[in-house]
Structure formats: C-alpha cells, structure tokens
Image 1 (spheres, rainbow, N blue to C red):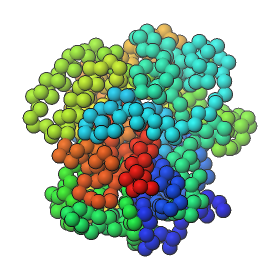
Image 2: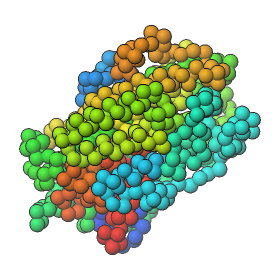
Image 3: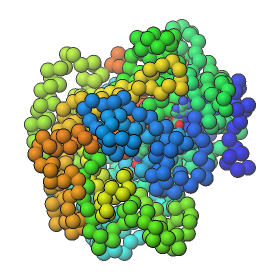
Image 4: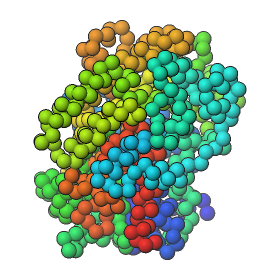
Length: 601
Ligand SMILES: Cc1cc2nc3c(=O)[nH]c(=O)nc-3n(C[C@H](O)[C@H](O)[C@H](O)COP(=O)(O)OP(=O)(O)OC[C@H]3O[C@@H](n4cnc5c(N)ncnc54)[C@H](O)[C@@H]3O)c2cc1C
C-alpha cells in the first residue's frame, strides 16, 4: 500500500473513539503519533488541517521552502496585528511600508519542519536549565539532551579537499564559501570556531548541520522521519484536511474533561471521541487559539466573545516571545569570486547547466541550504555591555513589584544569562539568499543579527468565537528598549567584522544599510524599519506553575483539565537563542515519555 493509501478517511475517524487524539500533524504531532502508537494496544488519531504533501517536491527539495512561503497550500500565512514601533519590507511582500508582519507557519503533515530553513541547532545548557528553574522539575539539560538526540542520525557528508577548509574545519563540515571568510573575520574578535555546538555550548561560530538526508539529497521532516514509517500501523489513523475547531468537554469534579474533538472536513463538521487524552500540537499560534475556542483561557476574553468558560486560565495566549532579526545588512559579492547564491542558482544558464549535470531530480547531489551560524554574548559584540546590563537590572528592580511573578522570574533568569559570557545573546546568520529577487544587479550576501532572548512580550488571542477567524497575533515588538539597543550594537559589530580583510577579500562594499546610516539615531531608525520575524515564537501555552501565569504543568497537562495536554513550541516558557526545530523534537520526545508513563503504557 502506498503512503497515501495508508492515510485515514473521514469515516475511519468520525464518531470513533481513540485513546489519544493529536490535534495537528506538525513537527511535535508527528513525533507523538509515532511514539504513542509504538504500543499496539493504544489507538492514536491525528487530525491535520493541511494536506499530506507525500512525495511533494516542494517539500522534499531542500530549497523548496522558497516556493512554499506565501503559498496557502503550504503556509498558514498568519498576519500580525499592526506593530507601532517597527516596520518590515522583507516578509511583507505586498506593500511597504506596512506595519503588519506575515508569520509563515507550515501547513500539512510535517508542519513547519516542511517549510523551515533547515538550520539544525540545539539550545545552550543554561537555557534549558532556566526552564527547570521556572518551576518545572526535570526539564533540565541532562534529560533534554538525552531525549533530543533520539531524532538524529548523522549521515557522512562528501569530503571536500579544498585546502582552505581543511585549515579550519573537519573535512566533513564544509559550508558555504562566504562562511569561511566570515569565520576568518570573526577570529579577529576572539570568536572561536566550535566543533560541538549541539553539546550545550554554542558560543562561537560553526557550520551548523541541516536536516537533509545526504543519501537522497532530500529534506528530512517530522513526517518523513517519524510519521511515514509508522503509518502502516493499524492503531494509527491520520486524517488530513481536518481543521480542528474546538475540544468538546464536560465538567467532572471542577475539572474540564475532553470528550471529543470537533473538526471540519470536506464541508462537513465531525467529532472524534477521546478515550484517554486530547493533545494539542498545533503550534504557538494555534494551540492557544484552540484552547480559547474550547472555553479554556482568560474568562474576560472568553466572555467578551460569547464563548462559555470551561476553565479560567489567564496565561493562555500570553508570554509570547519571538526572535527579531535585522534583515537588511547586505554586502556585494565580488562577481569574479563565482560564489553561488540563491540568485546565481536561479539564472537560466546556470539552471540549465545544473540540470544537465544532475538531472531534474528531488535535490540530488546539489542542494542549497544555510549553515553559517555565529552565536555571541553581549560582552563580545557591544561596546556598552556593562551599561546596557546595568540599565536592564535597574529597570527590573524598579518594576519588580509591578511585574507578574512569572515574568519577574523570567527576567531575573534573562539578566543572569546576559551577565554570563557563556550564554550567547545574539546570533549572526550568513544569508546568501535574496528574499527580494531583482533588487540588486550584483550577487550579494547578508549578515543578519537576531536577538536571542527578547525582553518584549506579546500575546495571541481569539477575536471571534468563529473558528475560521484567525487569532490576533501581537508580538509587541521592541516594547522594551533593550531589544532595540541590542540590534543597534549588533549592526555596529557586524560592520566591524565586515571591515576585516578576510571579508573584504570576497566583497566589494556594503549595499545596505549603506553610508547614509551612520549615526546612532540613524542606525536605530534603520533597525526599526527593517526587522523581521525568524518564525521561532514560543510561550503562549507556557509550562510554568499556574500562579505564575502558566498554562501547562511539567507533565504538559493544561491546568483545570483532566486530560488535555499541549506538546509543541508554545509550551516553552523562555525562548532559547537558537533555531527551534531541534528544541521541539526534544520537547516532543520528552512529552511522549511523560504521556506513556502517566498512562502506564
Ligand atoms: C519559515 C520558517 C522557517 C524556519 N526555519 C527554521 C530553521 O531553519 N531551523 C529551525 O530549527 N527552525 C526553524 N523554524 C522553526 C521550526 O520549524 C518550528 O519551531 C517547529 O516546526 C515548531 O513545531 P510545532 O510542532 O510547535 O509546530 P508546527 O511544526 O508548525 O506544527 C503545527 C501543526 O498543526 C497544524 N494545525 C494548526 N492548526 C490546526 C487545526 N486547527 N487543526 C488541525 N491542524 C492544525 C498545522 O497545520 C501544523 O501542521 C522555521 C519555521 C518557519 C515557519
């Protein structure tokens, strides 16, 4: 039977009872579906709003994300509430200036693991331990590291004989040529090349792995690696095009009990019955939304929308944190260096040559992915690190009595990480990709800094009881000055790095922001005009004690409910500086262990 044939039909699911009903077949949902259905005695249903995307070249070709973005079959195309402090011309293709941001999210089996940029990074030890300190016993580095490694297989990569690379890297860790110049330029600032960034210390520069299977040249997703191999199991039913609208509950001893999950499919409305648990794995945007549609959230918001309150839980949709990236610092590449960028690959004559060499296949030996990662602490990139830290500490002390307890504790941990030179505060991404083709007539590369631990907090809330109306996303970008000042100093640092000979050897000058952006005020304005999301938002169903604003306990159980859990990035209460997919695989693996243990299965 083909994989397509192994998918469920609506009649296999509607009105039937499953031990576990997983809402969302994205990254975490696929992991949970595979792990929970390992026990043949346990029945599992997955409801995924998008398509299956089985054998879909836009997913399997690694650089297919460039064509998935803004395509509604693959991308939810969420939009934020207009932001008052920042603008963005990169992820808002229809108009500039336009203060609303597109928030891409993967739709279909595999979720955002289908559409992401393939960076594979793991948080710092201190970042994971901070989550335990927020009141979550057991969520520490040691346990996380062990669980997070279960999703990995290292496939040997072709070896480069380029002598430049052999000087600096293990032969099997070769990245984009621009990264080499960047590494050499960074060395002038004492930034080390590290060879074990996945081991809990990522302060430095390194070639980050990609989730590409080099045997086939195709993207590895949560669907290809977890779900598809499990799809033939008779105890696993996966229904696509199933848009979950709410969880139907009853009340027992003051707790909400999930009885069924309601969904829309092919024009009809159906329900699947919950035997043991309903598990939300619908992303940072949709998990809090579905909770609110189900009557679980801040009673004031629910009452205003006419949604009957099932559990009053004010933390739902709060504590939203997102990595903000400065998206415009760009340098022209010297054409004679022949460095490949996304623009070069797209040129018809080059495309023809590649096709002749490699054929028109799903990736093959040539794929285009990103790998240049640099994570650095404030002490390295900012000339006024002490001043900025002291200002934040002072503000924290002044506001301490007025801050919600959970947020105060998060800020104290963030302050500790700022002071700790081992914990990076920004990332600089080498970005040889043109998000606006045709904008320059020369090949170019970006050096884009992003904030690791934003201070600003936003929210995601339902604005209607109609489940078709998407929630209001308010990332509240740059509400806190420090977020802005970190990006100001990061741009200055990136420019310093670019003035090094190693960088100048391959580039012929700064294209953006260019010489008109020189003073601090001009730099500040440039930052405000050119930031973007990096699609790593977390926190809207935070794992924290209830009295501190938490939504789920350390077993990922939603407070006030008997059998509803959340397992996805929304539960992570304090954003880590890294790209988040490997983090979510770790969260989902731990979630599977916890759910199995709690149910004795
Ligand atoms: C454009 C982009 C680029 C990224 N780049 C990187 C990168 O390079 N490296 C990295 O580490 N991370 C990256 N990420 C982040 C990473 O992919 C995510 O953090 C991770 O996939 C989140 O996993 P999740 O399970 O929480 O949510 P998702 O993987 O988004 O899964 C949520 C699933 O729920 C489904 N769903 C939602 N609502 C409903 C509903 N009502 N009914 C049924 N199903 C529903 C969705 O369709 C989706 O399949 C990127 C993300 C994006 C969007």
